[in-house]
Image (cartoon, rainbow, N blue to C red; front, side, top):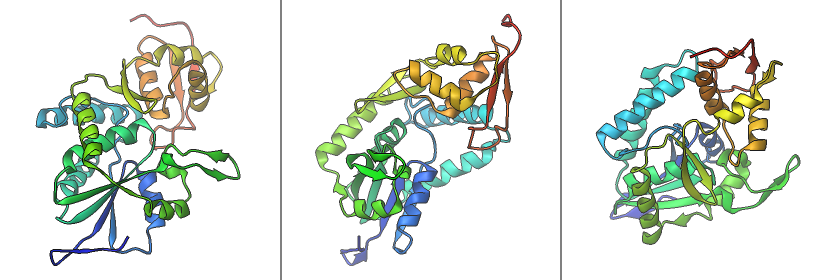
Length: 282
């Protein structure tokens, strides 16, 4: 997409993604295009409160919960660095120049869909042109998986992204209204756990996975990835490594679960768990 002049000003394109892997893939795809910029909202919107997030108090409540969440599952979590990243993202978001084309990249996963509604609620103003690219609207293939529908941008080869960019859709007034109405609904909820069910964002209790996680851990050493697989076999909805580990730390209050491995990194696949002894009393 080439920059266009409006009112004597040169417009620019800003792409917004909702995870760092998505941003990395898009940077690779758009590398030759020096006119485009990428903003990445790297926070996980599948978890954490969004109650009254359109207010200062709601924003601070979410910051506090997310800081506690990340500190629990990632050793060495730097709260100041995290807060700085969030502040920088929002500063760039609120001060996007006039006549800018903003392209929102999203897939059919709960993080992207909640974050999409959040960002649209901020950017829905007349001096910014909003477009979207739904990566889950296409069917692709690779040698390992064959044909599949991607649920996230990072699942696509960068070559696909340049093709999808040409198929971006302008957000109609009705589309914006629908997204903002759904966001208005979400900020009235009090859940800290969300799923995507047939395209609709639904809420669940924080301890939704606890029973299945507990059953999946036995006296033999079991990998966290195997726990996720066992939970998925029982649950209607998937659970991420980070949220499962978060709940496992809660389960340690009543169950003698030993955690082996390095939690000081984003890749938690090396974590192993073992149930030792008998249940502890509260």
